[in-house]
Length: 569
Image 1 (cartoon, rainbow, N blue to C red):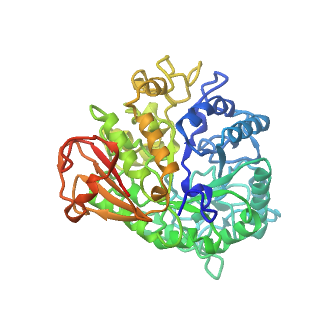
Image 2: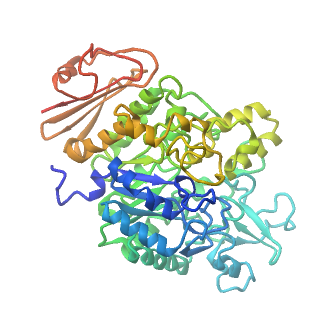
């Protein structure tokens, strides 16, 4: 199979780049990134070689969750620019061969959206059923402890229900209380979402990243109630079995595809917490017509205590990671497609999380990049990942801005966890680690803004920045360029079969890609110590063309964070 196979969609050989709009580039000096700032930096993205640009929400929003609380799906928030700025960005990106992907946030809206304002105005409102409203639990007075309609916990802390004083009923919010869940059981809601999507596509958008899209279908009992979740030592329960991958989710996505997406040359990726490989096959099988790929969370949960939250830290075992990624590679080999990522706006920086952001920062950033980008699937690069940007290393609670992090810190403190332990967990896992401003140069605010940034710039920008990386042929940036080039030029990277090698090796991630007689051997030491390896019957593959890694030296021993990629024809 060739890269130009007409049966292979463009996104299968593409690399996507994610921009967190408020932290990428500020064009007007207000300390917050914006759409004109992205447009100004498109030459940088073209030089990197990416094919598509995913931009986090820029809709009108109160910014309670930094744009993931939408108050108007039809317009650009003045904080980020205007519709004219968006048109210019799309046109400029397309002129450079870069497609533009929007963030679609439709599990919930803002409580300031006109739909919700109308919905909460009266129990008889024509939009009452556009959201999840329920009376207090039988036998309880509204507003008293335990009166919530279910015991579900919110992802951002506390109950997932908020009492509205106007009508005396509760509304559901799986996230912030300012993010009420839309009721997808109502066909009017789905129709409004479809119409909104069509408007953005008519404006030139090339696809959608769908925020927590597998939460939109809730399990409703015959009497209209929602079930309680299991509790784990507290009053709040885990409602996820009743809203993750819910009973009508495939119906809803197939309808969306049929009504909006079919027949268009787009990319669609669903964020799907709690989805398994089997779920992903159903979501991404082209014959089913739902989405092109999903973001799995399984590999991102491997450094947390099983059964705990992401804040319950545990060391990563490489053998677990290899087994997990291999299960996804193999499970979607015949039907469906993988998305590939280490970083995004919700995850800490990979070089700090699982690499070495000290003496081996460059080598470990390259190592993790190689493992990911030569797998089968569509890779996503998060802004600054291509520079080896590190975690923020914030040292006080006052320095954090993330609503999830601050909510957890309050609950953890109330539960008796000490300040040191709280700050340690935040330093490792807070979403703010990914959200510090992009590091463009050595100037006081890293070239991000001429004003005061909304979140402090990482002091290490004087060493780690785009200007220095572009000038250094051995930088992380140029390694990413090479990996992107390999995906664009080698069909085996896009279409090849995958086979894990050395599954029990605790230091080395080794795998083989094969297609039409071409074989690509990938060997990466993901540790700070030398690693001996015995490839056995596959040792002959080392005699091929070395695409990455040292051209000499003993291939039976990989140095700390060393890699070797060999092509055989």
